[in-house]
Length: 398
Picture 1 (tube, helix red, strand yellow):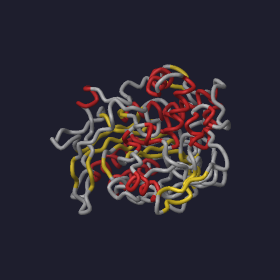
Picture 2 (cartoon, one colour; picture 1 turned 30 degrees about the vertical axis):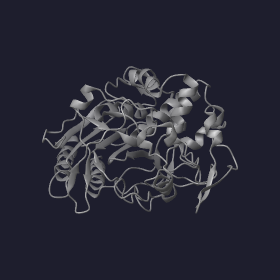
Picture 3 (cartoon, one colour; picture 1 turned 60 degrees about the vertical axis):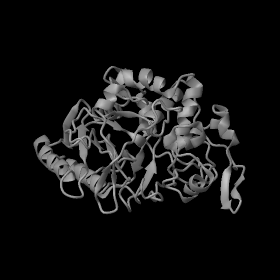
Picture 4 (cartoon, helix red, strand yellow; picture 1 turned 90 degrees about the vertical axis):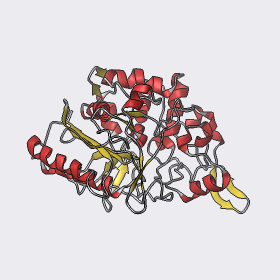
């Protein structure tokens, strides 16, 4: 375990962080509600909520449930790493050896007048490429070709949680570049085939139990719904419209890339595990050497790029730390240089579509999470105040 380098001025940070949350929900451009937390290796050191949970005006609380979207991905990657430790999964073996349907997918050369023009891939997709978003898959809200396949040829969205939604063509030959997409949903399928269990069952026994996580699930129950933060849409004029939004429950497929619901406090337990070299509150999840290898750069010279918002209702153009070199580890984005917020080189993090953001700083021994439920992604208020929140943390770290 890395020794603590920085010491947090907790009082100074609380003052700055509280003000940031209050500003996030204030004014015409505010978000409906936000929950934010920071943890060290031992416990949560900051926890607060501001605003409302729903259009009824109920106050949001730190115990409320969020659609976690792509913050699900790192948990799926963790389950895959457990199988690597047990020699049940070879990251560099063709993933189609575990999930034969992957062998049927072809590369999209172009979309012609009569439909998609496809060709066989020049190499087979590996699970390592799936984990690092270099396998060739995309998302329709970040890629014009996938958007056209959805609009003109009926390709279902991943939020339908169907097998058909996964069977998209590759956008390029495996390993040629980094592109964010449905790769981790396929990792979930690899895990299910190896274990013979649904992904939620794997999470419950192999990750959630040793972490003491109590309220994460691919399926909403009544207890969840009573505490569910409502989704809102940001309109072109900056106003907000409440949405009647739920992911399918129960889903046909447990989508390892985006399907979990849960609380921020439970996610902090997952972040603490990564700060503690794989050790959870009630048992070990990963070996220390697995963690140390997993958080390194696994994309080589391939860099994480900006995310172009091609469906305006779902995403704006968005990028973490423009101008800063970024790679991908096995579960997380990795900033190769110090970020403008103060996050050191080698820091980890990612996000979820409804403007959820987190970071993990193993060097200093802290991690944080900012949760809202607002579309499109890259919301100026939520994303901007999150960056202010992280910056306030590092300004309070001595």
